[in-house]
Every structure is written in C-alpha cells, then in structure tokens.
Image 1 (spheres, helix red, strand yellow):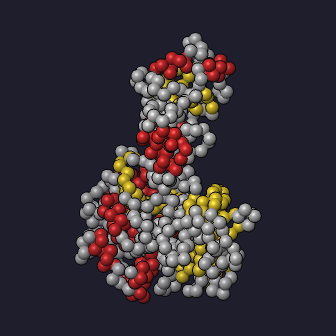
Image 2 (cartoon, rainbow, N blue to C red; image 1 turned 30 degrees about the vertical axis):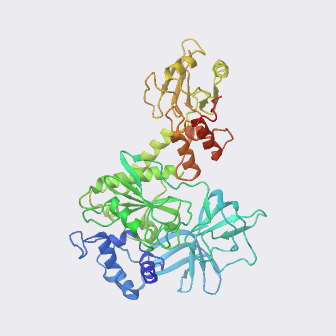
Image 3 (tube, helix red, strand yellow; image 1 turned 180 degrees about the vertical axis):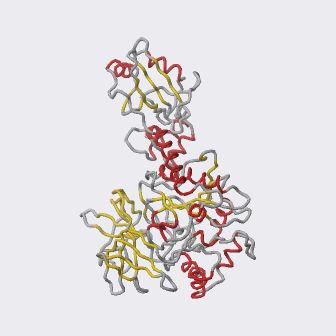
Length: 541
C-alpha cells in the first residue's frame, strides 16, 4: 500500500509534477486500445511503472499524456517555506521545463525564487469571514500553515471560530483574545483520516434529484487516506475535466464505481456526468485530488466535474449536462456564475481536452460558460424572494391582513391556515378592497387548480383598484417541502439540513423555523414529529 501511495503521489502532483485525474484515463489516439481493454485494467497497468522510471515515462514517452510541459504561470497568494525555516510570501507561480521534472519558481517581491527539493509551498485561499466549527480540542496551533511552525504551548478549545482564509487542511482562525493562529483540524496523533471541524456555511450534498431532466445520484466513497480524505473545504470554484476515456461503457456510473472501489490512490473528484446521468462521489465541502496542483487551490478549494466521453454515449449532450450541473453547484454554494475554471488553469494540463481543442462536438469554452451563466441566472430568478412593486403595502391591505390573522414581512405572507384551498385564500385576501384581483401560482409561476392546497413557496399577486401590483411568497409553518401538508417528509428535510445533507432557502427555510427563533434546529423537527404523532399541534398564528 505504501508503494502504491508513493507512485500515485508522483503522478498526481503531490510531488508537484502537475498532473491530474483525467491523465490516468486519457488516450491521445482514440483509435488505440490498451491491452487491458478496461478502465480499471489500464489504471492498474499504469501503476506498474515505478520511481524515476515513472517520471521519465510521464514527461517524455507516455502516449496517453495530455500534458503541456512548462510555460505555466498563475497568480496567487503563496507561502514558500525554505529548508532553513524562512517563510516567503509569493504572488505568483512560474513553472518551467528544465528537464525532468519541471521546475517551480515563485515570485517574491518581483523576483523569481526557485523551489528546491527541501522547500514546501502552500497556497492561501481567502474568502468572506465565516464560522468554522472545531469539534474537539486541539493540542497544537501554528504561526504559519506548515507542520514545522508549531506555536509552543498554544492549544485551541473546541468551539466556533471566525475564519477568512485556509490552505488545504490548515485553517486560520481568530481566538477569543483576537489572536490569529493556524490550526489543522485534520490532524490526529495516529494520522487517522478524519476531520475535527467543518465550515458551518457550506453544502455537502447537492439537493437536486434531477437537473434539466437528468437524474442526480449519490454513491459516496468511503473516507480513506489518499482518496476521500474528509478534509473540510470552503469551495471557491468549480473545475471542469474530461475523463479522456472513450471506451464503451466508461460512463458516469463506471467512473463512480471506480472511485467507490478505490483504496487510497490519491485520485478523486466530486461529480461525474455523461449524457444520461450524474453521479456525486464526494461531498462538495470536502477536498478531492483532481487538479494536479498538490496542496494548492485547485485541489484545495474547487469542486471537480468529470465529463465522460465514452464512444457509446453522446459527448455533446454530456457536456451540456455538465454545464447545467456546474450552474446548480455554483448556485447552491453561493458562488458567482463565473467561478468556473478548467483543469488547465490550475496546473497547465491540457484538460478538458475536447473543450480546449474543439473535438467530439464540444460547444467550446466560451459557449460552455455562457450556458452555465444562463442556467445560473434562471435559478436566481426562480428562487428570488419577490418584493412588492410599490414598496410599502397600502394601509387598507395591511389592516386586512391583520384582521385575518395573516402576517406580511419582507415579501413573505404567513399566518394562513393549514389545509385551505388556494381559491378560498384568494377570495379572503381580495376582500380588502372592491375590484381587487388576487392570483396564486406555484413556485414556478404555473397556474394552480382552484382546489389545490395553499402551500409554502406559492406566489401571490395582488392588484388593487388602481392597478398597482403587490407580490409575495407563501410560508406555511412546517410545510418544508411545499405540498401544503405537514408530514414525515418535512421532518426529514429539516433533519437533513441540520446534518448538512441538504439545503433549504427562501420560503422553505422560513417554514422550517417552526418555533420562530430565527434558526433551524433539532427543536424544529421535534415539533413536527410531535405534530404528526398527535402530541402537539403546530399553529400557523
């Protein structure tokens, strides 16, 4: 096993040769077939190459490689720990082809500094300040994100701390006394693969069951060193790959199974997509080994999508599915629509090959990004909390809501009795003024049947006699899934939200706050459970 880890570390950039996941399965000549004839077989054959022989093969002779040797430059915030203990702050990395292997230089105060064999590098990822939860006390803290920089006598107690930057498995937190220190929540005395902390405002499982009609399935890898490490991650980008494997049957499920059955080979990615389905193999808030840049930002802060190109599939459709998937990932993680990168951007690798070289019916990178943006904008529009057109509601409508025990606040209308029909609610609201027109649609704006139940997420439009329109979204307390009922499915949605297995937003998040304390906690799903079991009723008022 140690030999296996050593070999894969070399190949995937842990020793910073700048390779990545797609390399293992890439074929430069699609007409050539490997003796093994299978994804797993070719992978095992690749592992037979050892040590320096592997490096020579990678850099000079490998017909499967899609590697751009040298000439790779990228700006960033790097820390370079020299062998003498000095830490240098660098603003860019320059990779040059000077023979085997490539050589890294870091720009410090405008000058290039060579990374020697005894040096260590870390890239710092910065973001808006947010809470990081440390689950257990730590016996060590660090002045810099390196194992060698331990602060003598400094311990950190379990609790919630604010952070605004991290570096792979290191997180910088602010202590109660205002002091900033680095911690490694991944560290355990026996180096077990576990995490003692997590970013509180991140999402693990993509909540979509289908995206543009394509089913989304989960087959999560086991937590194991070198594969799914469990390192907590605050995602900053989505990274796009091509699998490079055109074998028949090498679709999303095959790649998901390959990951699921792997044992610590330092290869992993979050999603695989083909023309028919999408598989998630890792939580979105965990580090995966896919970008070929070692412990830098590509691996440490991005969510990976592998696009299948099996010859019995439809690559163009798979690529389109990937664009829609990327938009949903970005939206669910609160990232902007343009937070999308190619594998090439992180390590110089010629991947995603088809998109870069316009092969196999690709839409190309520009069109791919445009497709992501269009779907992202659709999601934003669909989930935006409606604001009343004219600002403040007129006095007579506010008074009417009060008399009906309804409550309007920031675009939401609550206080509607459970089990009412939408036609009855519309009639009741229209009573505030003669000739008022009230319409109620579902969350997507589609017309509802008159006998449909009033439910969370539905949209209400009110036009008064003067033609002014006021819009709002319905919130039915404890109706978390928006079906107009309080059932076990609502309880499960709250439980998944708490356990970071799902997300809630907008009206659905408000419906989950059953006890109206501004939070979604175990006390909320207990109230729903008691309601279902007849041990307590949930009032809408």
